[in-house]
Length: 213
Image (cartoon, rainbow, N blue to C red):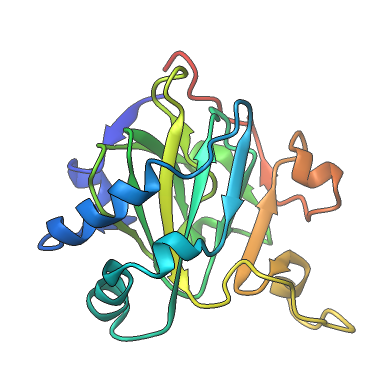
């Protein structure tokens, strides 16, 4: 599949590059590079105290979320496949120690609770570039550009996101079946581990793989 850059105009419907926070990004990267990286697969931590205690956390809250309480965590590891797509009610901000790839689609492309993976586009994010992924953008775990390096990616979200799913006694809306954690709605590909664990299948078509792209 074609891999665009976040500097290309094709990225504009999905997100933006955040300018003016170079010092903040540098402070975050200095800590992010030492966060654990699985040798295989990916690991995710919603909130990392070492990141949360940085002055940069206040900068992200004020300049990216308008003063909302935020959590700074990470997604690290090695990955080349789509597997799932998720969305939140708010933007997500990402920053990588290494170059990484985001596989993205648009919420409005979901039809009858399903999305065809042919709608998904791939975007390379250069190391050290802070990007906003809009709330209307479907996304999931990053993909690595270099299998030897893998990725260390900051995940900044409103406080409480991706924590325990609220107790819903009975699904009343179409979205309820997709809610897998607090502020996290997920569509799984049938070939994914998430689907085997019971996540709602919402992706049709190929389970995209950027390996060799």
